[in-house]
Image 1 (cartoon, rainbow over the protein chains, first blue to last red):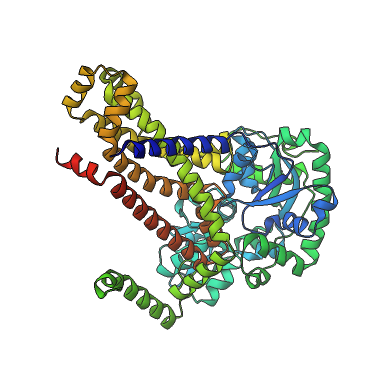
Image 2: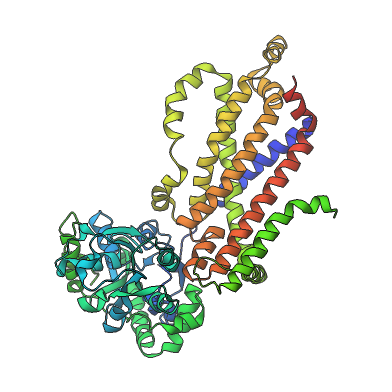
Length: 316
Length: 254
């Protein structure tokens, strides 16, 4: 082999390394606020605030980042990849319990009669569920273990006098639910609209329990959280963020058309699909006592190690 | 194109046609499967609206940067360990303790330390690429004809001259095989990082399409990743032939 070719290769390698090191040098200081949310309607108020220019109106430069798995949000906030994130109550409380210094800065979505009815345990054909104890010994797919729907379902089982340990829980993500129910891989899935309607229409089974409606709670599902450090240093920004979110929440709750358009744009879901399901109720105000019920439920399910002080969890 | 060259395509084409027919006849309704025609349509749309080209750029940039850094580290360590037995023995426990860590297991730490974006992905890809390079380079350097080393000693070459004039040229064909292996690993790891955490690139595209219940688009991304992997391999094999045609042969028959 010719020496020039070796030289050229080595030079290429060195150049490659050089360029990569240059590009990977510490990121520039961020003026833009990144909001990280999963592809659900819970962060609809932020999506609408971006689309309708409400953040801009309040002098904020905001961009939304899609995040695949909700439980990654706390780490993303701490690494400053996103400044504000939309964790579920369970993810947030577990992260804080684990020692991450996060603080809630505004409310996003709360449970209400509409969203509670949208939650269901969908049972495959050939399985009949008449009462809660029929779930004993069944294989139930939850979109995330110890995540929102799973915690609610376990709470419901406990309230109905069924030992959750007698139910076999596995993880099944939303998009794969229909196929797994069809193939009989699980006996039931914990799901929500639009999946309930889609699976019912496809004749894959029936609703076994409306555990959301039976619990009939009004506690927060998802709220906007930031690192305490960032929130305290940017008090004015947080104030303007809250004002924009409050205006957007009114649109989410009052104008389905605008809300659906923004949700479809962010989640990339087909517009008809988004329109078929009412977005979760937006509630911009979050008070420390709103988290009390979750802390109680999670403590009873042994998901929290420490005693959390609600007053410290929400920024004044 | 002659019939002979078209033959290998017949089986996949027939399978796709069968799947298309089955999907249409059973009126397939699924959130994770889609008929080939819908996949191709989604692929065309995503190529046209530049979402796939941009994602491809992000993924390949992270994969190549990680590959370059990982290979450079693996190469230098491999040469050092190959030349110096004491150093190799000294580092053996350390290397063998770190090497089995799956690169993906570093994700949670990498996310907190580096945040989203290229940096995290490049670091994880580089970590995965170090090991095949290190181990194959080390063995390549070890198996260099001892007489060559004697010659270098007789010529009183300095250590750097010895590496540049004897070790690297003699071991290069095998080092390039390691590089090809690493390139495959780099692409796999880059896409995996994107699927798991990083919101850029082709992996993130798959996740977003899946969550948006666009099975056709998700499978279009998958198909595209296959095409890229195939093209990358062809490119590297061609490079290997061109650069080491005779040298590679000489390595096989000393």
